[in-house]
Length: 168
Image 1 (cartoon, rainbow, N blue to C red):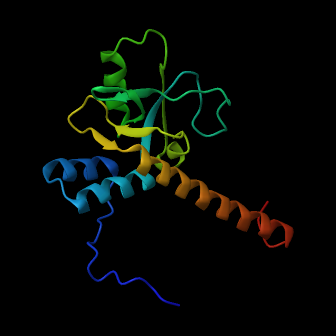
Image 2: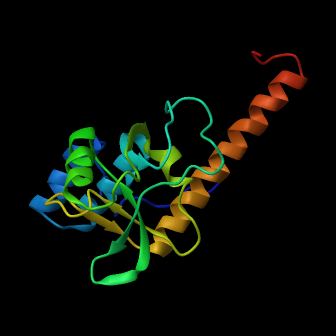
């Protein structure tokens, strides 16, 4: 089996999301950008929701995530993710949205990517010095990658159960 030559690929450090954002803002490089994206998939993030949810069970099907615009491009929806609860609370207090999106929940970063819809980007820490933008095309790719991984895991789990080797 051929494996890709990664000898010229930069090594991407495994950091938590807060550390990766700090490294990116200290020096904007391909490696620091990649570190933020990898960190997003392995870290917890905080989201603002329009209805209560415990962050563990399945949310109600009509639960909506907070969306923001892409800076001056007000027509571009971006999923608002926060690197920690304090940033989410600060954002929530500094915008005028009434009683909407008052539910602050910590979730898996990879799970949050499943909330990305077609044509939607991602804004980590919107309106803050730690902000990081993920374009809609890359956000869709990340969502599809997470969904495909979850399907493979579910299939393996289901296969284990039907063969009698899995845990129920």
